[in-house]
Picture: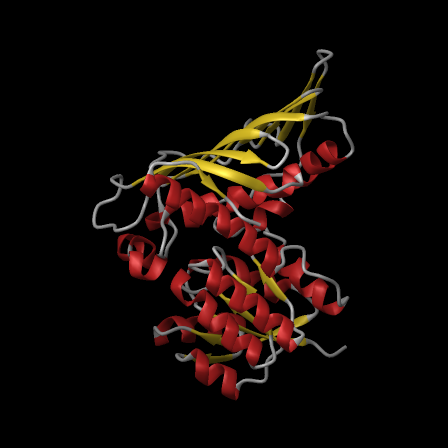
Length: 342
C-alpha cells in the first residue's frame, strides 16, 4: 500500500502533541516533512517523527513530495499557507479558527474546490464520545424539542500549553486576530451547531480583556445565541478559569443532557419521567493530558482521503462556525444584537 505523504507546518504544541503523534499512529500516512521558522523546533520534530526539516513553508511545498499538509501556525497564517498548499496540489487540514475573516475562509474553500482537494478544519469537539452520543439522542428524538443550552470552555490560559508560554503569539492581536473566542469559543460554536443540527442566526455578547497582562486580545467572553428554530442559550469562553471547564448542558422537552459536567460520567441523561442514565464514554481531550488521548481528527481526515468521502468538518462548516465568532465580536464592539447571515 502506497502511503500518503504528510508535511506539517508549525511545530508548536498542537503539532507535537496532536498532529504529529496522530499521523505517526496512522497506518495510511508517512511524515516526510516538518516546518517551523524556529530551526531547532523543526529539527527536533524531524528527529522524533521523521521527515525533512524546513524553516520555510514555501520551500517545503516546492521541494517535498507531499499529499497532505497540516497547518498548525498562528491564526493569521492559516489562510495564506492553506491556500498555497491547496494550490500546490495537497489536501489540507487546518487548525481552528480556520481564518481571520469570512473573506479569507471563502478563499480557502474556493482554492480547495478549484484544485479538487479536501479541506478540513480541526474542530475536535465533534469527535468526543459524549458529544457524539448526545447528537444521536437529539437526532433520534429522545430529548424532544430543545428549549435551551449552556456551554462553556475555559481554562487558565494558553501560557500553560503554548510552547512559548507567556510570550506566545496567542496574546498578540496581529498574529492571533482573536483571543479566547478564537481559541475556545469557536470550538463551542462548532459543537453546538453539530449537536443541535441547525445554524445560529443572532448573537449578543460581551467580549472582554483584562485577565492577562501584556495581551492585546480578548480573554473572557459570554454570548447569548439564538438558532434558526428559536433555541436560545449561552456560550462562555475564557482564559481566566482556574480549572478547566468544558461542559455543556442541553435542556430538552423530554430530557436534560449533561455533557462533560461530572467527574465520573461523561454524559448524564435526566429523563422527564425521573429516570437517570449515566454514561462513562471516556475522557474528553484536554491540554492537561499531555497528548495522551487522541482527538480522532487525523484519522477522520485521512479516512476521507483514502475513502474519497467528504471530510466531517469541511471548509464550509469551519466558515459557518467562524462567522458566529466574528458576529460575537461585532456585537460586543457595537453593543447590539447581530444577525448572522448564512
